[in-house]
Length: 326
Image 1 (cartoon, rainbow, N blue to C red):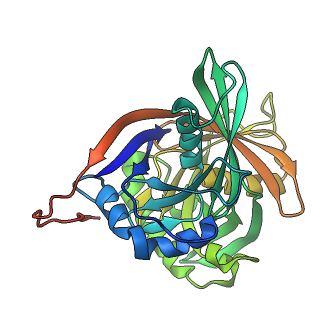
Image 2 (image 1 turned 90 degrees about the vertical axis):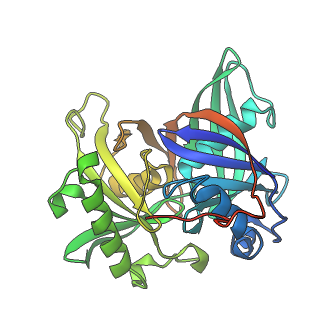
């Protein structure tokens, strides 16, 4: 039996596994991520693949933090494996930790839930009102620009890091816009771009090769009422992030928003990024500080619990841990 508590953040699912996972060895969360496929990949497949999940499912295994400075450790997973960062998941983990009483929270204030993830230590700043969670701000690892105008697959992309490495491109550059009707075409372009960037020097992480490689491709549109001329200096954009092998983020993508903020800050943005998703949900991002490593983005959103589950695998079930059709 495997138990989970499920959330969505901006429409993107996040399945938190609370029981039934074998111990995943490692001295820290990055090492546990390396060891996870050998020890718990069957659980990932069972929960992510059909018939219990779907090709766009997302979730995490809870693991011990690296030290007493964090409340939780998390190994993020999707249909193709284990990722290095997940902003929408961190927002959900903040709501979960407070709602389940794992972290004592100020009933009318802000409380930090500290989480160790494969890309480093992040925070979910949980805002409560009247004892209820009213909002969560994801405080990312330092984020920075890696390269601009990288020629690939007949176009050019900007590459930046926000806990994972992303390639960004205006949807107009491929003759499309960020709308549900264009998703199939955008996924096709994303797969070509990601494949063409495999092994490219601009996709190497400068300090930890375990964080190397393009995780996702972000297509964005500029929207009206944004830009420096706005009353608060904000920029408004709509994006869709295609990550792993053609997986579509329904939220504005937390770590992707951090990577976008690095690009926009370098280009002169000093206000907020109002970041919409392909389904209309919104994150609001700002730069909280600048370090030697890069900017520190804060990304505000909200997560909602959708259910509690107990999953089983009948030993006689010929489908076993499931399948994907895409």
